[in-house]
Image (cartoon, rainbow, N blue to C red):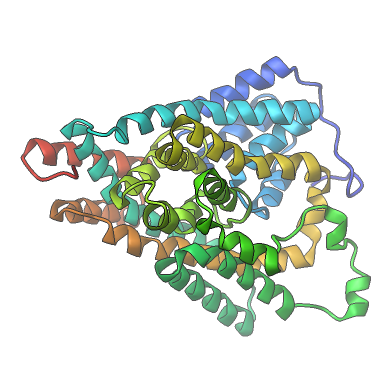
Length: 410
């Protein structure tokens, strides 16, 4: 753990060249298959084990602080590590190099998968990969449950509230997807209110939330207006969908599914339900952040321009959090109200991820996809194997199904 005074950025052990940051963060962006666990392991090996740029304690502090923020935590960690080594210039360059390789790959694949008349084997591949996605959602939620449950502590009342938040998120995800962001924020704020301390004790706390310059997402009229933005349509609506992913999501990149599925498929008809399944699958099997799934949705909405806009908006909050608040990350971890908000919003997000499996499962169009889904569920939940293997295996089975004459989505 750090011994620096709270609120002060710690000096990097050495001044790392920007060219080195560009090369190393770009390399991780190219080989970072497997989502946040793989990204964290690669960053740890680079910054702690191989180069000793950061201490183990500093790195763990960065992980803990990024996990308290909305948006893609592993991307924020990549930006934070680069910021520690070379300040704002390093943060911007490192984050850019971490994101861009996967962005190039996923936009290229989006152009193939979203073509007006893709080859039949390509459609079979997409249908097979998409069939595994509902199982991936359930597995992702299951993986997050233990840590969230431990956060509640031993008190019975806290555990009952945790179950309520989990259920609320799951029901909201399955039934009222467009309003899910309000449910997540409400669960967090309920927990803040329920665990509020007397005024005198709050006044004696070491760090007030206002000192963090990192605020809980606002509710009230502004959030209600934002939730109604789908009526506006066009690029403004696309930007709002991407913003929800980058600034108002808790629980990892998979929260993208319940947050934007309904709007992308039903409200705007940017893509079909089957294409949305394929978009989620692409985000899982390409390198870099899982949140790059928004690039596929943006591409479906407005071509390459839409894909780039969606990515820019989705990742802008991550850069803002680190550049504007990185020096306050120690205070963020120590703040009781931030911890309380995550105690409520966290299980609601996990429930939302699991609940997303319902509309995702209903989007399957062919009977053979149910067999792929069952195999993926066994691979992920019974054998506890990796997500990439499940989706790639599903894609291979989809090609086999097409070659055997099974129907695929036209």
